[in-house]
Image 1 (tube, one colour):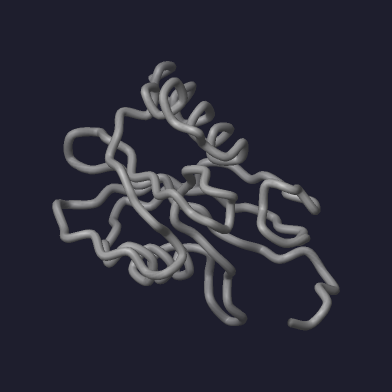
Image 2 (spheres, rainbow, N blue to C red; image 1 turned 90 degrees about the vertical axis):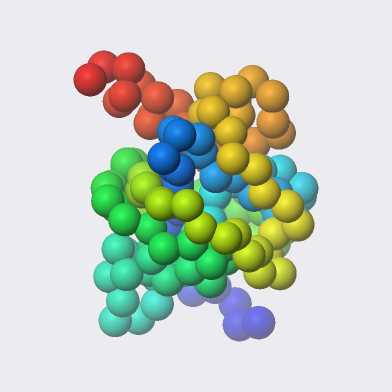
Length: 141
């Protein structure tokens, strides 16, 4: 793989089912921690298009009502399986019921209340920040 020359813009998607449960998946890329679907924004692709594509590729789900949540920066964090510099653009989305089919980036998944996810699961720190950000928004409204 070529040496990284610039930070890579990526998307992460907090997906909620009709019961308000959050989709999380356990992945080897984050050393077995739970996180959200996401990945690189491809050249010529908008962040929203990337969010839909990455969700489809990693979960087989079709999302709707995509909304920007927050941004974060990951600079050579040892939580990730290899040294990378990412700029995360995190979104929330909704999904109607659908059959989840994981690709090879994840080992298992769970639908869970977001507060319980923070209390009960080993969630990577960036996902935890996004969940807290989401919870602070819904508790205010």
